[in-house]
Length: 107
Length: 249
Image 1 (cartoon, rainbow over the protein chains, first blue to last red):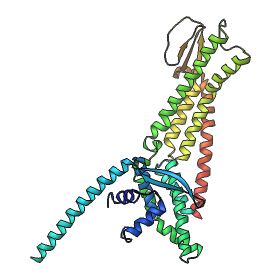
Image 2 (cartoon, rainbow over the protein chains, first blue to last red):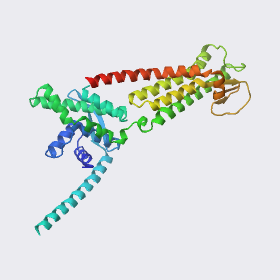
Image 3 (cartoon, helix red, strand yellow):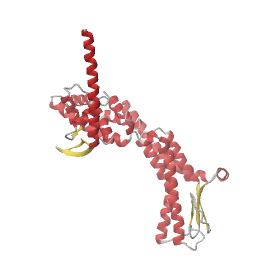
């Protein structure tokens, strides 16, 4: 699962800014709860991405509660493209191998 | 602060995570915890059960700590290079403070006491303020830098060895540095040596033989060491006491 949290977070934040709780709920909902980790673990990933320049954060008060919202930077968009390509190639290769294994069994 | 968050903070600090990253992480975790608790309460759980469920969803202390500690980029300088943070940097800062004090002394001598044999004579008005700033820097820099070492060590929950080395170095340098002035036309300039139109100021450390013979610097060394180490030692005792109490609770 190396790189998967980064990929999911960058994809989610590509078009709208979100805060940590929203990000975790969106990951749960959009992956049908297949990807579920300790929810607090998302923050070191967010902070790491921000430190690398892939995300920017800003404090915003919504409903009288102060939140830190994250958004993707141009560098983050490039990183998302790279991660998406790598992930697509990896899954295609694994899928191919799995299918090959099934054919071999059938024979 | 909730007890698990308090434990997490101590664990992160002891592992070398920089205090500013710890503060931000805990702040966001606390916000997230509030959201989860509200969600669980809306789902019909009591306050206590909602808090328990929220903590479970947030992740165990081990997982939360591991996620942060595994990222080396969040480590503080004092954890990555304790020798630099607690020993080298303070010595450099003290040297710079002494250079500033020496510069003030020699320029003040040239500006306010051009005919005087020594700058150590009573002065008034702006000259008193000018020399006073230099004197203040000279006498208080070791203490302030020592306190900064203690504060940094306390904030980072550092092991005592490097802060102790730093405090000892600062006390030794602070307690044995001497200022010599001479009315001369010498134009030589070097570290710890300033020449002005009125004379020169030279700063040096008392050498071992001088110290052994007179022991003049030793009380000053001990005084600086006591002044700088005392707040850190008191904090250590209080922290250990509080920690022991929270563990037993």
